[in-house]
Image 1 (cartoon, rainbow, N blue to C red):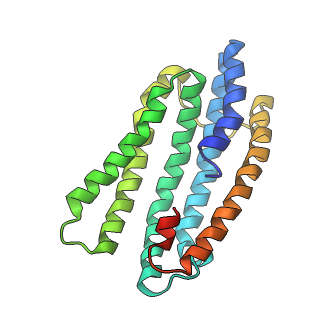
Image 2: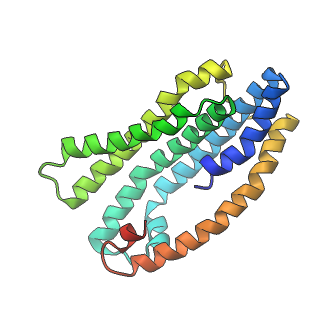
Length: 214
């Protein structure tokens, strides 16, 4: 939520679209690739930390979970984190495509995510308990997130020219994107505080309360 669609679109699209409108295509390409590189690096670190710290993170977000429920939640958190990272990369694809007025594909791509979850659960649910089905649904979520990125990449390559991630922050345009990112990130973070409190309280209630809240 903090690194994905809304924040990224608000910071990247204005700069990238302006450069395209001014026919400064090489600079636009440089900005897109630099943002991709920075996102990939940041997201990789967050995903790695999330997977390694799935246990403490679960205790922080859902302190009311214990026993088998906690253990299952830890496994789900560890499994879902790579999918969350892929969603951030999908948001980058969406930002590029929207800047080129290619709206259909980026907003239809999530359908593939849903289909992947449904098909994997249908194919593997037989004979599994609720925990096993949840793990298969989480696996489907990660597979679907990867497909959501892959289905957009050919069109992104077509409109962008080439994808070559970099960590070039020397460009003033890249620094503008980073400056734009900060306030939107903080604003979205304030909203997440409320969601965090809700999750903590729901975890202290009966089974299903967190799901009902979501």
